[in-house]
Amino acid sequence: MWAKTVTENFAKVIHGLNANQLTDQVIQRSKRMILDTLGVGLLGTSTEVCHKVAQYSKIYSSDLSSTIWGHLDFRLPPLYAAFVNGVAVHSMDFDDTWHPATHPSGAVLPALISLSEALPQKKKISGLDLLLAFNVGIEVQGRLLHFSREARNIPKRFHPPAVVGIMGSAVACAKLLALDQLECQNALAIAASYAGAPLANAATQIKPLHIGNAAKHGLEAACLALQGLQGNKQILDMESGMGAFYTDYNPQTLPTLQSYPWLLEQQDVAIKRFPAHLATHWVADAASSVRRKLVESSENLLPLDKIEKVILKVPEVKYVNRPSPASEHEARHSFQFVACSALLDGSMSVQSFTSENVHRPALRELLCKTQLEHPPDNTPSFDSLYCQVSVMLRDGNAISDCCTTFYGHWRKPLSKEDLEKKFQSNALGILPTEAIEGIIETVYNLEKVEDCSVLSTFLSGQSPRALPEKLHFL
Image 1 (spheres, rainbow, N blue to C red):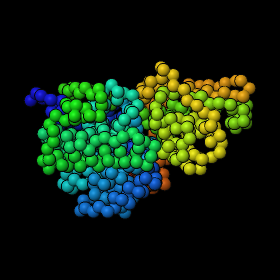
Image 2: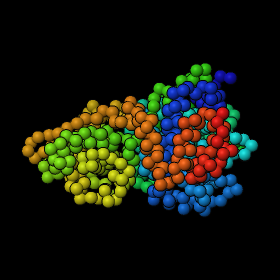
Image 3: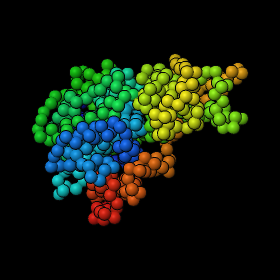
Image 4: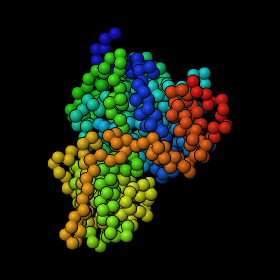
């Protein structure tokens, strides 16, 4: 039947897409996203913000329960497992980033993994089921973002995962629950009423809650739609619906199901090498290159006393302009901090954002010498921005370098080896080695896995030897 509205059209496509329409490239890219998201989520379980939301969530009880990543003896009802694991994924701002700007995986994967554990045992969820639902959730986020030109720039008002992430979570869960077209429409409508979070909470402990809430509320929206709860059937069409979040919102129908053109086929994601706002990754690469030039004749030590000024030519992004960050969360959202850290150390890592490193005297001295410039051609878009770092020396000389594409960007993706190293480094200390290896093998063979609950078993820390019956590949 022909769809009369954009919302009807979305529901029809969400309901109609099947695993045969997933291309090899979409499968490979999404498996990389899944592996990376699991790794940053495991690392995030060690953060203060994750500990706080986990303690809060313990007040809830249910006969149904799902795994909290990195814990053998801690389970929660599916909604709160999705919430805690979603917070863990974004707790360090280490998760993947797309264009137009959002963090696509963290809102979807925790919800799907939690839901897959909660479904009746007679309904096995295969790895291919998980891949399809995951990609439906990613696809809807991308399509909604493409309905706004302002969304192509780094946002100014709403944090995108809190807007489109929750919609992606809802439709991914709707797909896993096999909702019909009307129920898919209602899942979209319900999710929209949970959407929206202001950027004022960026660079605080609250920002990871945006991803956790997107995962939780998307799952909740799908479950409520399954129960028959009804909402506005034109939620994607109306200015007072999804249009409330974008001043230039212009929705379009999706392509037909025949030879469906997935956005992930056309546009890969960026996978971060260190945990900070994506825009700072251009700064890190440029500053690291400048440092190599500076220390060639200085016995590998940065000549701080010879530096008069550091100039960063970056786009104007107010919430990443933090001249003197006071916490790890502010440091992750500071052009200045990342530039000075990379100049001092030569590279960035998880350890760069410890309190000791954030407050070290040498870094504070360099921050005082650092200033930003905003060239008019340097637009705040993850697809086109650049960063030039210039160090002005007291003798009148200047050392500069410019980064237009950092390693990890979709134009220069991480190698398979480096992606695995990132995952292993993030999971080390959270899970035993055998469980880490089990996750890697399972994700790489996901389309052949008969029962994807094996992922949850590994994520809890169990060894592959404890579950031979689940290790079946198709």
